[in-house]
Image (tube, rainbow, N blue to C red; front, side, top):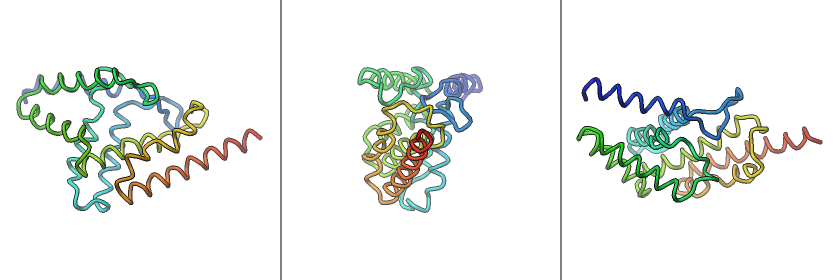
Length: 191
């Protein structure tokens, strides 16, 4: 890749630092899309022992790239995202990939096809981690940042995506235990 092409990609990637998500950090600021993607990669790195037959390097590539569309569209919370929003994001991702040099166009095109199909073990792992990172981040944030609908959403979010694996189901159960504890502590505080 030519140096100037790489610099142009860095400008796109920087948008992921600037575009914030609905989630808040434990220090009371909005989380960036880049921070979310980083933690997905971090999680995937430490699951090699749980999924020894999976290509975890591919999972990490999926985690790095999964929200690239949000560099162009910004983040839309899951409970607000429409089919039209999803189509728009898919179109900008396809356009982004089409403008890459051939080596990367082919590699990332195939990667996104696999991610969207959600049939491979790697795609299922990435998708489950994507959901679980959001749940974990909400549990780390101050509960006053939660919307009323998030009390129930926290307990249901990612349930379908984690069902494929005993480990992922256990991770979801552990996160749910943290959610219940957080809600109970808030209720006790209000009494």
